[in-house]
Image 1 (cartoon, rainbow, N blue to C red):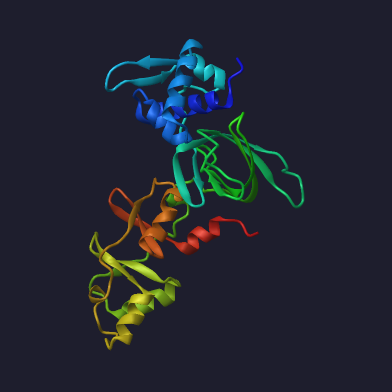
Image 2 (image 1 turned 90 degrees about the vertical axis):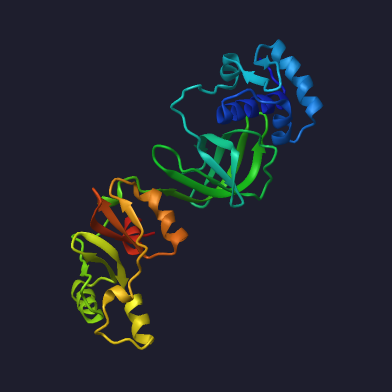
Length: 292
């Protein structure tokens, strides 16, 4: 079946919106995504209904549904196991767009690395020169960044010059944390904390009252306290940070990396069964990535 470019755009957008909302899609919503006149969409929908690629649903909550024939025509799987591979343009996530295939076209070239990224959604909103980020992909957690230098509207693909490819770590944080965990008793003084930091060559530790974690104290906390006029006999509980960022040991590393930036922290505590078992720092994360 030889569909026109606009018909392919409409079908891909219809399928994308239908999967997101699990309900019939209105023509006006499709028109907004692909920047077309709603009247044009209605006219094309009549042709697509004739081709048995869409079904019309009457009523105020009605709209259009894609048929199985539409998936077959576009070579798109209906598998409920598939997940969206996100795409961001110039740093802004595009929720209506998903990558479906990445073809590395110049992998062996010594100076150039290009890829063709096939997408589910309209390519019309992309322009040459746009910075694009694809991923992470669901299995290998591959993240690709680059610049668009061309697009293929007929096949719904973007051509990008790759500047960076990263495979994000997939193991749980317990595989990367520092352990055994050094702790500071709640009764300890700043002098006790400094001795622990120097002896264990660490920059911070949780403050424990028995089995209860009360907070975390770091070298920075100690320095600030001394600069404010406190002496080394001050209790760590007076200068510690009470809001401790915790993460379960089963959580994958790539899922917690962004917490360091969001919370502006240098470390977090790894817990299992509600009990602290290790500490994860920015340095631990840096060690995961091989040197270039």
